[in-house]
Image (cartoon, rainbow, N blue to C red; front, side, top):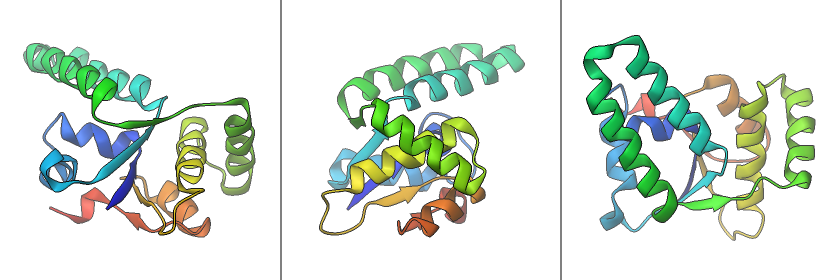
Length: 149
């Protein structure tokens, strides 16, 4: 299958939370899935993990390890969608149409870009219900990792 993961979903690969087991299974290379990420996901995931480490110094070492692992996988395991001026223009349209946060609109624009030349739609994966609703309105199938305890 082909998936587009937003940051709220991919971060579950690196920290244990609701939906992590499902995310780990989908992202396992042995499954043969293609995984797309918007290039900005790198910034969002490192920021989310870093905030967790700062908020709880007891997990700082595991968080540093998770960031290192993410950076390696970001460079080699995912198909990255470039953040072009055209894509940002589309993100502005999506932000206005669905009242999305900025990076959420950019994530959805990235998914729509990745989906353009596909015969079967790419599945949008996010733990954000407002973003999922916008993705569905744009015609993408959606999966919420929080629905997979």
